[in-house]
Image 1 (cartoon, rainbow, N blue to C red):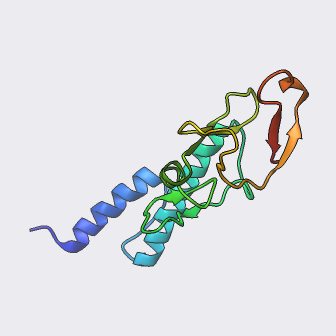
Image 2: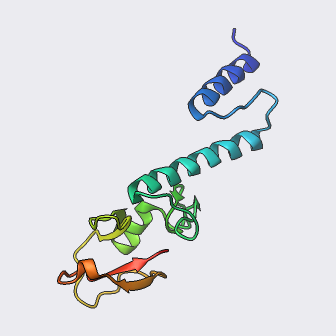
Length: 142
């Protein structure tokens, strides 16, 4: 029969191997959970940075639990997770189709002219390399 201590040791060995973290059987449950959560959030920020084509940090990222009611997802670039933004605001955040622009906001439904989409707190900047297109402005997050 396998003991609980042996199973815990096996679990921690696997956890350490896949996360690169170092937990021991003496680690508190709080330390283990906090370490796993930090690992998950750091991994999500890294993935969003890859999508943006540059490192992202505050105020562009707000890693933490989604503020959606009963939502169990993490939110990285907005206080709500991707699924809640799609469901509530009908938008997706993804790699911009404008070269070098980083992330872009995309409609997940057809909006009519004048429809409210969502609040956004960055300054709009005129872009000379976008003149003559429908996308003559971009949000300057620098």
